[in-house]
Amino acid sequence: MAQLASMTAFAEATVISNGFQLSWELRSVNHRYLDNQFRLPETLRAVEPAVREQLRRRIKRGKIDAILKLEPDTSEPKLALNNVLLRQIAAATEEITNAVPNAAPPNTLDLLKWPGVLANPQVDQAVLMNTAADLFNDALERLIEARHSEGERLLTVLQQQLGSIETIVEFVRPLGDSIMQLQQQRLQQKLRELEVKADPARLEQEVALLAQRADIREELDRLDIHVDEARKLLNAKGPHGRRLDFLSQELNREANTLGAKASQTEISQKAIDLKVVIEQIREQVQNIE
Image 1 (cartoon, helix red, strand yellow):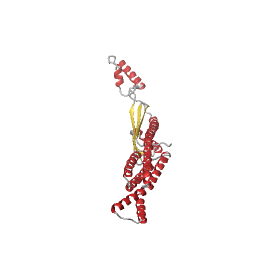
Image 2 (image 1 turned 90 degrees about the vertical axis):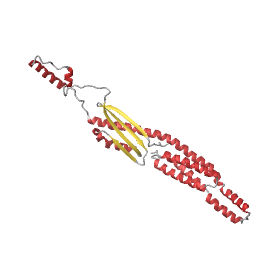
Image 3 (image 1 turned 135 degrees about the vertical axis):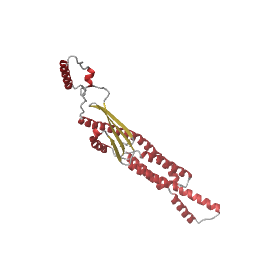
Image 4 (image 1 turned 180 degrees about the horizontal axis):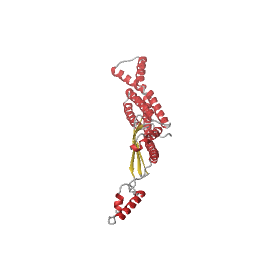
């Protein structure tokens, strides 16, 4: 069975690299087309074209918000000393002590406060760029898994709703087959109430005309056809959303016609039940890729 994908999902991925913590957050909601928005730090803006293309290849529909956060790694703070500068300061301090014996030598805290003694960690921009791109692939994979997981739940719901349509059609079909006989009985009852005798041939003609107007067998057949088509589509390769949306419109059209033709209270009620189920299908389909 083909895997159904929902357009609603969330995923994130985090890694620590080169003294920084990088985090991707991906949020996906339903949309008619593929619409993606990226928010990245300016220092890593150059990675956007590559990750945008990766997203376009893997996802066909949905509004995707992708956020990359770059923060210093404070989990294990480390102090790096500029040993070259520190040795130069020590040599200069020794010269001062020789020249001015009474001068107080600097203490350790004074040395740490000296500009440049604490070295800033070197940032390898290329490493960060590659890390951000790889991390995005991890987050994207998790997003796709989440969309498929939600899609499996939607598939179960859709199968149940299609089964409900089949049950309603099976219930209504015998009623539809007896429409001509029912119309004949109704017309004869009216004639008896009016104490009017009708020509048998004319009566048969009128009954046939009324039955033709109230015949719902074609609508029931089309409902069965659309349900079969929907089941085939659910087993086919995606994306499925747009085609399922079209089928839900066709199902709704047949349900409306069935309700308009209904000549019995039971058929009218079942037409209403049918429209409720089809509306539930239409709502679910809006979230399918």
